[in-house]
Length: 92
Image: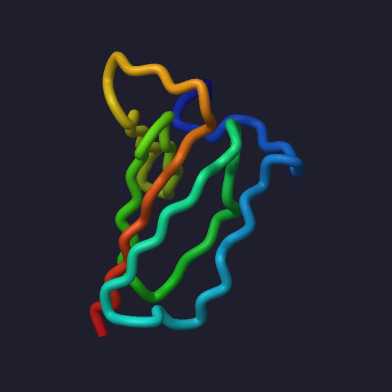
């Protein structure tokens, strides 16, 4: 578990590649993906709003403002890896 809001150590084997999108395909766009345990994404930014949540497992997001965690369901244990969904909104 990270200490003082810092992300845990990261292994190159668990790096999640960032999908290549220069623009969203439409103003409101959703996508889902399955992640292996310990997956992480390099720090990045984009011109749209991103709302991510866990379908199963625990999703952690580390920002300059702090670290945030969300479990899919309290008291539920899944044997598979984490799965997440993201919704994107282009405010332009």
